[in-house]
Image (cartoon, rainbow, N blue to C red; front, side, top):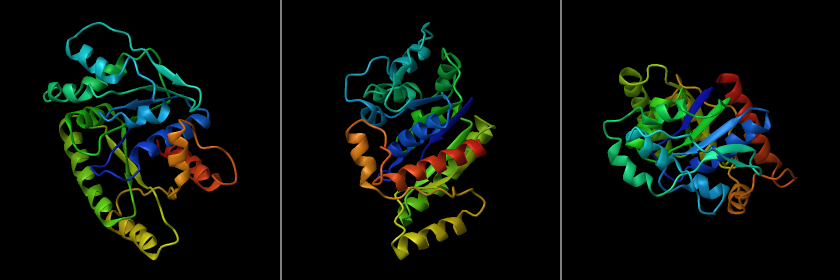
Length: 251
């Protein structure tokens, strides 16, 4: 079982849609996938369904902290082909309780009723106790970034955080790589930023599969659907498939 956290302390980089589409692409390659929504905004959950969610991840945090017995109820999305544990705004209340409890999510994963090939965790765009729990529970981190200066600068923050987590809490944690998301190949600036990221972080793997900027992703998630396979989406759909293949090869 490979547990992967998706994290960068920067909003607006398409982290949540990347998480969902990557999880879907891995599932389409024949792997069993569980996606966990680990942020209070619950955006990943909303992308799957806007219906009221039961058995949210904050409930499991609370039960684990209280040492209550429970059995996780896993939800399934036929559309995306993945299992998932949704989030709710209740995670805000859990955040403070996790201040000195860094291994709660790891314990929750240890009690799952099934073993998955991959568990993909979506996180908030800032460092929090929830994020620390995610990293402690993970084998790998994928860092999504836009080809922009402000976003690229935040990669260093993640690397520093991973080093601290590795030293004190999870020595097995590794950075799987950096994903360039919302790529604009037509612009000189976009192409130059890719070169700059590779040069600045030469000791970190940068995925060869870069995700192009596309309104098709926003359209699909608005409709609670995976990317359709047609002429309009072939470029973005193929990019996620190639990224998923890289992830399977590396992880």
